[in-house]
Image (cartoon, rainbow, N blue to C red; front, side, top):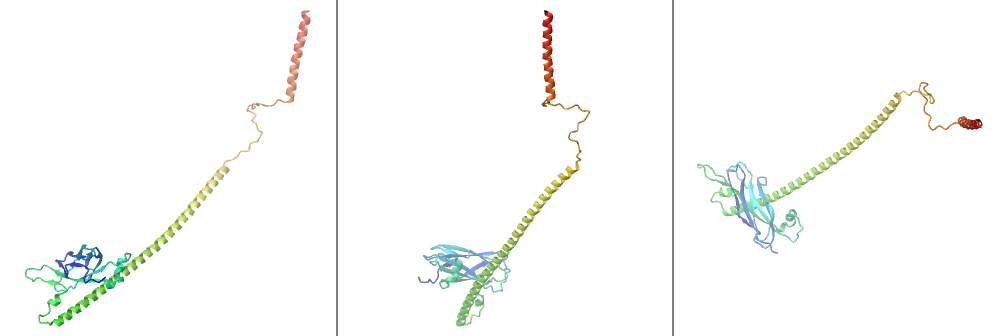
Length: 293
C-alpha cells in the first residue's frame, strides 16, 4: 500500500491560538478528520508537555470519522517580549494488520509508516489602549528580520528551524519514554517494598497469635491446678472425728431390728410354749369330763 502524503485533516492546519489573559487555564481546540478508507491511529506531542493538557492525546479514527481535541494551556505569567516557541506534532499511522499489537509499541515497531504534521502556538493577550497589540509565537524572529534580508538566507533559516524542531520532538519523545520507564520502575519498586512490608507484618501477626494461644493454654493449666490445690486444701482443713464403728449411745433407744432372723433358742422356747398350751387344753378337757360324770 502506498504511503499517503497526509493521513489526517487537521483544523486549524498551521497554528493554535490561545487568547489571554493567562491567569487561568485557556483552552484551544483542534479537529482531526480521517478522510481515508482505513482506520488511522493518531498521537499528539508537544515541546512543552508540562504546560499543556491534551485530551485525548491518542486514539483511533475510523473512516470518515472526526475527533475534537481539547488543548488546555496551564496558567502562567505572560510576557510579550518572551519568545514562546511552543509547538505541537500530530503523528498518524494506518492501522496495521496485526490486531494484537499494543498501541504503545505501535509507534516503535513501524517508524517508517509514521506521518506527522506540526502546528505552532500563538499567544494573544489583550493589552492596554496605549500599547500596541502583540502576538508572540514561533515566527516572531522571522517577522523581526529586516526587509532587505536575502531569500536564500531565509530558506536556510527555515531548513535549520525545521531540523531544530525535529530534534526537539525526537528529544521530547525520548524524554517521555525515559520518564515513563523510570516511573514504571519506581512504581514496581514501591510495590515490591510494600509486598515485603506486608509479608513481615503477616509473620509478626502469626507469631503474636501463637504466643496468645500459648499464654491462654498456660493460664488454663494454672487455673485448673490452682482449683485442684484449693479443693485438696479445703478437704484437709475439715477435721475428721474418729468415731468407733460399733459405738452406740447408751441414752438412745435401741434401733429397731426389722427383718432379723430369730435364733434357735427362741424357736425352742416358742415350741415349748405351744406344747404347754396343748397340754393344758387336754388336761382341762379330761378334768371337765370326769367332773361331769
